[in-house]
Amino acid sequence: MTDEPISLDTALASFDALWSPRIVTSVNDYDVRIAKVRGEHIWHVHDDTDEFFLVLEGELAISLRGPAGERTVHLPRGSVYTVPRGTEHKPASAAGAAILMFEPAGTPTVGDRHEEVPAHVDATTGHPLRS
View 1 (cartoon, rainbow, N blue to C red):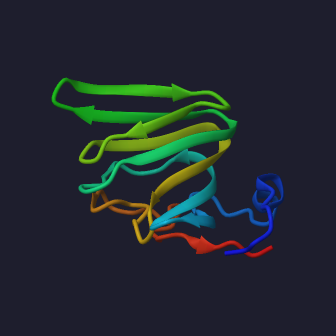
View 2 (cartoon, rainbow, N blue to C red; view 1 turned 120 degrees about the vertical axis):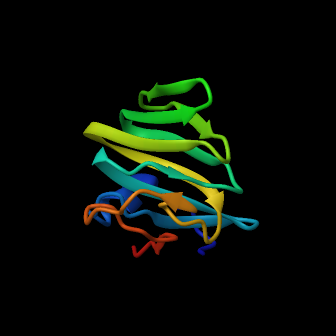
View 3 (cartoon, helix red, strand yellow; view 1 turned 45 degrees about the vertical axis):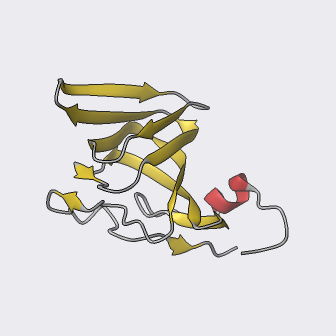
């Protein structure tokens, strides 16, 4: 963590990997992560924590499965959405997006339960941001 302001534009320009979040800072016991995304993630569930998304660039779609069936929320640039804990979900972006996520430190990107992880998805708890 740094005691200087962090430019999200500069941070995003420092890496190219998709679906591979970088930790830009911490707030109490939470990580603030940024990621570049394109295509589909995987269906997964975080049993004990909500997952907050802020779309910095592009558009993100989050498909959700629940007792009432399946639905998709669409998030244009500047939109936020919180996936409630225990909700099966799959983020996707056809054209690509940059997102910011806020979740407890150590939370795996593939959740506690998930389908098989393909090679394009980084199963991580976040990588340090290198400037």
